[in-house]
Length: 208
Image (cartoon, rainbow, N blue to C red):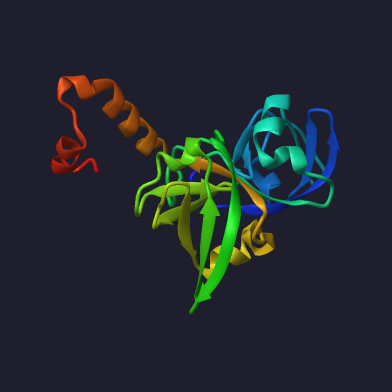
């Protein structure tokens, strides 16, 4: 499990079959073989450590269902180690299971903030709620103005500086993971509507 707070921007150094080598000396301080690392929001397992980074193994399905398939040497990636049980929890629950690939539609500066608009696949859009959470390339962000298949987020300068959002432009593809709590609430509502569980009932009891 992850928090959506990016620890480092790594750089892809090699891609060979399922092996993806990433440069990141910062993560080496507390990393070992078998650990989980989120790479652009996708949970991957460390297969080996190198002098200046690590190697993860990526399945063909993960390459096909995420933006990882487009990675080449020199590309920057967001990195986060799995959350420790005794660590601080600062973002939201991020599982590292990418739900789909979305697209940057626009970026507009508003004072110190920038407002980003994204197009989301249905596997993500159906779970979005105002002020809810979403992970974009592994970054924990708050949803603004969700529509049928689009939504916005307001991003502070420090997030831009310390993540790959600084490199993203309209038209770029990004990994998206919907909030796991929203997924479970929707699943609960669909399966138990026949038992009298309704959106109104959930709202009255503070779940929505």
